Length: 234
Image 1 (cartoon, rainbow, N blue to C red):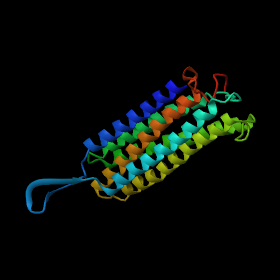
Image 2: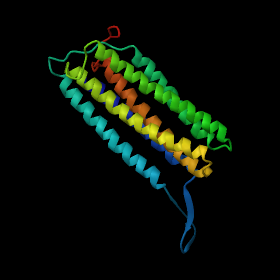
Image 3: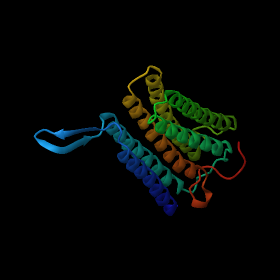
Image 4: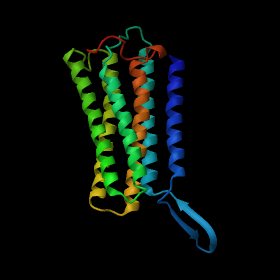
């Protein structure tokens, strides 16, 4: 179990670091100006929105790490009883992967003077993300119909906690998505559109990275961490 947690932590850390490196290497809207009195010396800075996003991602990552640590401690007790494994979780994971890819494609589309392509990309990413949320709600409904509610067991409580907190973050991302779509529809400045879409893409990749770790916690029997067993869907 300890090896599994270390592996998942390293995986999430590697993905977040890769996102950070991608962010600092893609700077089409960063301000570059000569420092006063020092000709030829360039001064660059992150936009406040980008800095705020990374602060938020650091806080969100810490929150998930705390929840996963609490889960790991509870898992070691003898009364732990795994839940049935909903097969829909794999489908939802695939949908979120597609949503992240669609948002990345949209971010690249903002580098071209084609607002229609950006709108189509945003529509696709938003629809796929909404489908992920709906799929998660269907899983919740399946569990509830089978009698697995929050108070049923520790495994049930952690399932609802981890998927619920992640779902709230996804819904928050959809709010940012709405802002990005509004800017595109109203003909906002291209640099502003690039910034907000790129921030959305970073956030979507973060949501996917977190979900990959959570999905492993939910179904990875081989790591000894699974909340859900390999039995049929409820």
